[in-house]
Length: 103
Image (cartoon, rainbow, N blue to C red; front, top):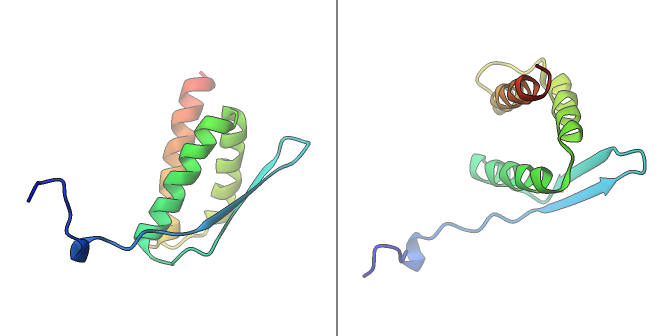
């Protein structure tokens, strides 16, 4: 059997979810995720999709503002939780953005 072929019995179930994006006239964007399983693989797939979409379709300053808003929500996250990991990732992304654009 070829190295790149995965037997059906070993394939993982696909991650399925729904993303609703509302772009308001004032420039704000709301992203709602529905119907996603609560497991690390699914959460990671959703985040990767949102990041990919956002970097292609949103202006950098809107992405930065959305990250700051999410950081505000996550500020009380307990260490070792998925929320704390998300907070850390968002803080690193904001720092990289601010280093690049606010020198």
